[in-house]
Length: 65
Image 1: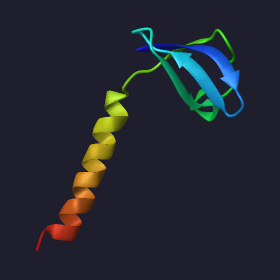
Image 2: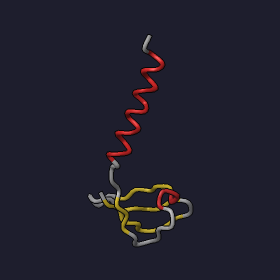
Image 3: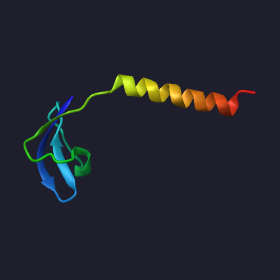
Image 4: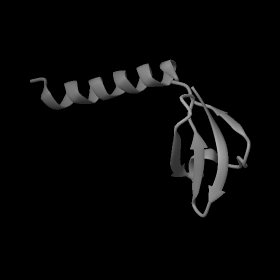
């Protein structure tokens, strides 16, 4: 997915989504980005899987007798 930074308004970036809709998001999510920049948003499957395993291990430690 990509978003285009349409404009910056105070602490928010007004972005256009792939479907043309507009959304206000905290500009801190786009460190250093400026109006007109195109931002790629993707899922980091490797880190997601690592985190899921870590949480599962913590849950096992809590609930396994």
